[in-house]
Image 1 (cartoon, rainbow, N blue to C red):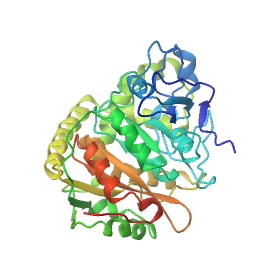
Image 2 (cartoon, one colour):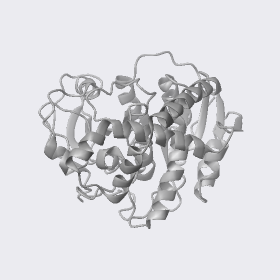
Image 3 (spheres, rainbow, N blue to C red):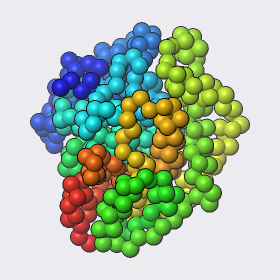
Length: 393
C-alpha cells in the first residue's frame, strides 16, 4: 500500500561511517536542509522561491556519521503550522492504524513512515506537539528533547522559542538508540517521584482515560495530582500562541506578503492572527514564559516526572467539521504547551486501545534530564504499548 508519507522517496544518503546505528534507515521531515536539496516546507510556493541548501543540518549529519541511512524526505503540514497532518498540496499521509483517520501533524509523513514500517525511525520537528501528536495518533514512540539540547541549525524555523528536533520509532530500543546519538552526554539521576497534571487528565475522553490511568497505576510509585498553573491551562496556551505567532510572522511574514503563497484556510488564518500580535504582547508573554521555566524547574527536580495524556482522544476521523477539529487541536495545545513553554523533554508512549486505535501517554522530566526520562521509560514502561507491565522499582 502507498501510505503517501514521502514527498521524495528517491532521495537517499548513505551513512558516513559504520557505528551504533548500522543497518537502520530513517526518513526526515521536509524542513531539514540537506546539501543540494530544495525543501518544500509543505508549500509549493516555498519550493518555487527558495534555492537548494548548501549545507546539511547537523542533526542529520550526526545520524549519518553513526551508520544510519537516510531513505527519503517526508510530507509536512505547510510551514509546520498545524497539528492535523492534512496537506492540500501534497496530500495527507495515510494513518496505518486506520486509513479513515488523520495522522496528526505537522510531522505527519515522518510518523506514518515509521508506523507503516517504511523506515526504522524518523526525524521531525516539534514546536507545539508536531512529533508528540502524530506519534500518539499513529501508534509510535515520540521524543521531544529539552529545548536547544539537540542542534537545530539548518532547519526551517517556525518559532525558535519552541522549535526542537524530535524523533519517532516503532520500538523503544530504537528511540533510545537515536537519543543516545543526538542528546548531549549527561548524568542520569534516578527518577522515583510521579506527578500527574490534573487539568490535562480532565480533557481525556472515555474509554481512553481509563486505559491510560491503568498504565499509570501499574507504576510502583506514589502518584500526586497537581495543577501546574494557578489558573486555567488555557492561559498558558494563549501565552504559547502569542509567542509562536509573533516569531512565526517575524520569520515568514515578509515572504508571505511578497509571494502570497496558497495556504489552506486554517493555515492562512493562523498566519493572519500571527501578523496581529504586538511587540508589547510578545514581550509580556516572554516574561511570563521565563517565570514558567523557573516554576517548572522547581516542580520537576532531577528525581521527578510529570505524567500527562499526549492527546485527549485517539486520531480524529478525516473530514470532521471545522469546530470539532479546532476543539481537538485546542485541547492538544493545552496539554503540549507545558513542555513547550518550560523547555522540557517529553516522551510519548503509544498505548493500544480496545477499539484497535492508539492513544499516547506522555512523561515530562526536568530540563536536561532527557536521558533519565528515557531510562525511566525503558525500566518501567517497556511493555506498556501492548499492555504488558514490566516495571520494577
